[in-house]
Image (tube, rainbow, N blue to C red; front, side):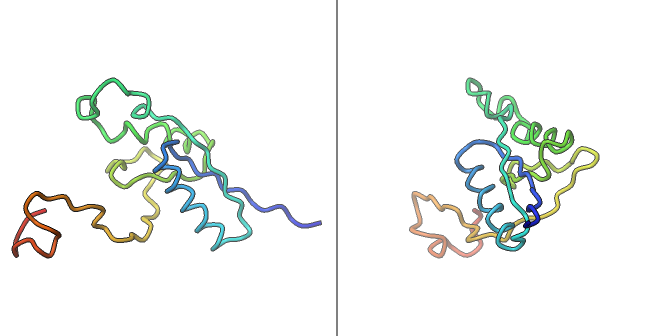
Length: 127
């Protein structure tokens, strides 16, 4: 009888972007470690639930990560996948930033009323 694959549980938000990121990490892990089965554990965060207030008013990066951190600490998940923009600088005891995935083109988007693209901007411009 074949030995069952070990399972690794990834905590993620349920937004389309968060799910895509978590699925990308899961696929990489399963490619690199075929003996591991990866499962996604979706969670709603405070930021996901606060649809009536501007996020700038309620503040804090923890709005999109606190519930995932709690899921790690209470054993519901083994790791979490976040957008780096949502990751706080300080972590609760027992958690740490373990990995940042290799980036694709870091220039997600360039929007300007004055320049066609980044190379058209004058030397020394700030973006």
